Length: 111
Image 1: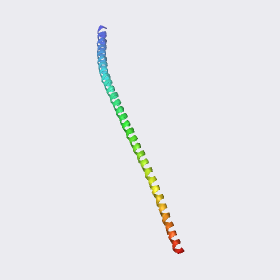
Image 2: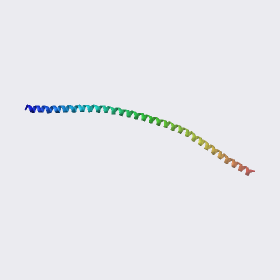
Image 3: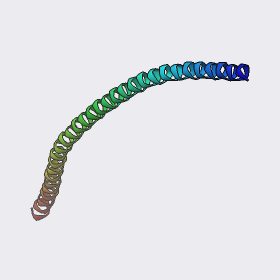
């Protein structure tokens, strides 16, 4: 019976050593995973910061493009006004020339 108790004690000791080794390995693995987690968090934050910076650059570029479009729009409106004014002037000249033709025809008929 003493032998049986000693065998059980040895078996339990082996199990305890095995469990202790397993617990040590799990603690080491857990520590490694914690370090990896912190690294991934830092990398994720860096990517988010980079994304925010890219977004800020995109917004700045969009604002610059908008300003350029507004400048072009303003100058094109002025050019269109000038074209319309020129067209009106040409219309007046054409009507004046028609009038001159009529006046000269009337003068020839009247002579």
